[in-house]
Picture 1: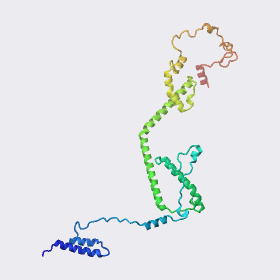
Picture 2: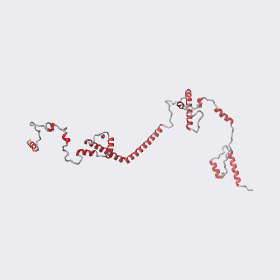
Picture 3: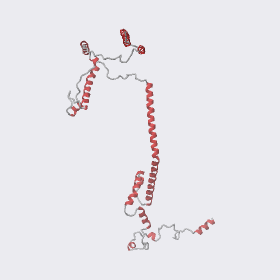
Picture 4: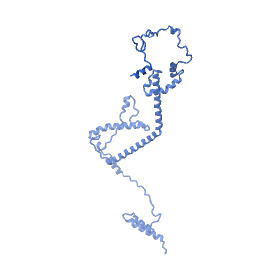
Length: 317
């Protein structure tokens, strides 16, 4: 008689599994599984998971019980539910417009119309619910002495606050450093431009003062402010150069030294100057009231003694 070793092993496995299945807890622990694997009782393909078919139960009694629980006639204080139609569109009524949305007539694809319908419905609910809450003694506003303990402690919030402040200060410092670098980069150039501008304005003002002192101009625009003076000085030479004819300097020199040409005979009398006696003064002509010094007793004008006489007078003294 030949006995197959495989059949014996399978019989032993079935016996072992049968004994274990009879126990209350048929699941094997990790140590037992390790021992079975060491003995060679566990092999691939022995344990196959099989999905059990789902059992559908028509629990009519349970459904009726749930429906009865839903239909409990509880007071409104326990439910706090409201079913309202949207409030009246007061704005369109005041403006004399016909409201676009009526009750139930809402285009679901129009986002603005839909959201406005929800808003008006919530508005109507609030207007109806507030009187009911006040009637039942439910406060809708937080009292003045209301105290709610925070989820995080004050120490923790102080740490967060310090961290945020330090972070903000670091950002401000970095921004200041960046601006300083930019200023250093262009500071020298700006400083040179400012100095040149001041020197130019100063030079223009001094030229204007000199011209006024010499009588070349009677304008006092340079006294009205540095801005206007600088503007006039910067535009003045351009305007003068664009004009035809001699400039102010040339005119002043022509008036002082003449216009060139023939010089001889310019002091000769003409017919007009001979007949013009408007500048004649009798006192000056007869030496009766001139600009000279004081006259003595003899009517002669006192004269200053000569140099030699003055030296003798000094040596005598």
